[in-house]
Image 1 (cartoon, rainbow, N blue to C red):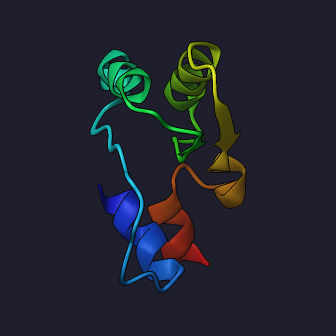
Image 2 (image 1 turned 45 degrees about the vertical axis):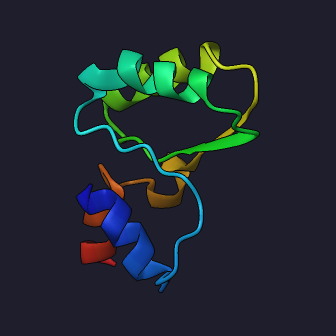
Length: 89
């Protein structure tokens, strides 16, 4: 959740109007996938950690959905997550 709040803060977003699914652990990727599949999403943006577990979660999720998705972890390349990126830049 802190990474999502860091993203909103960094982008100065105060009136977020979209859906957000926050996984407190990549171990919840199956539950996240179930939610993604149960809604009528047209596009997903993944802000997963830049570590091995984050890469595995991204691979799992992207291989199992049939709509457009974007890997946003490139936004904070060189940092583990968005919060670390925001604190150190």
